[in-house]
Structures are given as C-alpha cells and as structure tokens.
Length: 93
Length: 93
Image 1 (cartoon, rainbow over the protein chains, first blue to last red):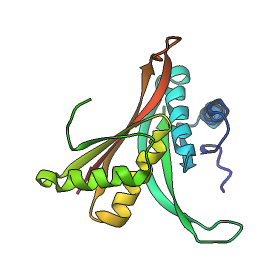
Image 2: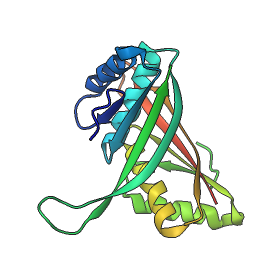
Image 3: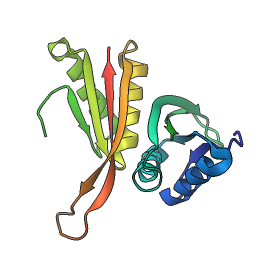
C-alpha cells in the first residue's frame, strides 16, 4: 500500500485513531484533500471518521466524492476467493 | 418511515434480503431508481447490497449518488443522545 500521507486506510481501530490521521494529513504540507479507504466492516468506521472530521475538526471540509466497489480476496490459509466491498471517501477543505 | 417501495432501509438482516427488495423495487412499476438507506454498522451491509445488485442482477445499474450524514439518536431507555452516521445510495438503471 502506498505511503501517501493523504490516503488513510481505515481498519478495525477506534474511529478517533483515523480522525487524528486525517487531521495530520490535512495539516501536512497544507494538503487540500485526504482520501479514506476501507473494506468490509470498516466501511462504517470510515463514514464515522469522515463525519467526525467534518462536524468537529474541519467544519469547512466537504465530501468531494464517494465511490464504492468490489475486490476479490483470497484467504491466506487457502480456500475460495470471496468478494469484499470497498469504499473511498475523498474529503477536501 | 415512508412506505415508498423504492426506498429500502438496510438493517441487520443478511444482505440478500435487501438485494431481493432492490430487485422488487426495480421491477415494480418499472422504477428507474432505488435508494438504499442505512445507519451505523448497517452502512457496510448497504454497500454490499449495492455491489451485489450491480455485479449479479442488474449489470446496467449505476450508482447515481452516495451521500453521508449524521443523525442524533436518543436511546429509548433514556440517557444521553449520541450521534450515528447515515448513508444513502441511489441506484439507477
């Protein structure tokens, strides 16, 4: 995965961890945009993160675009590949 | 909640229940669009539903728009209101 500080991969940690990452992303090099990426159950967390950022920290930030998709995941322990939903939320201030 | 057959409220049931509702919505009165609404953890399920519909059932269906928001929920048993994230996915064919 890319080390772009303006792309934040949302996983199973509490939302505030990712909120801090978004704030850092916006402040670093005065970035105008930050993208949240999430898969599966973490999609709800990504929406929470975007909403917390917009409502509490960067009130001028806007949701510029949201896209959804599907990725095929092959389990590490073998077995059939299965589909998992993905989401990207692009925030701009 | 409105009884509009083209608005589907996604909750905690398995995704295929809602996929069936979307298919019914598209077929009833030859509707051109169906909107999925979800809150909290069900947001991930709503994305799964949209992806399953697009990939397996209506390959010509497009995600027309996705919006996110926040609602304040007051617990029925009392206590402090808390915020919950919401999402709407508008599908068109």
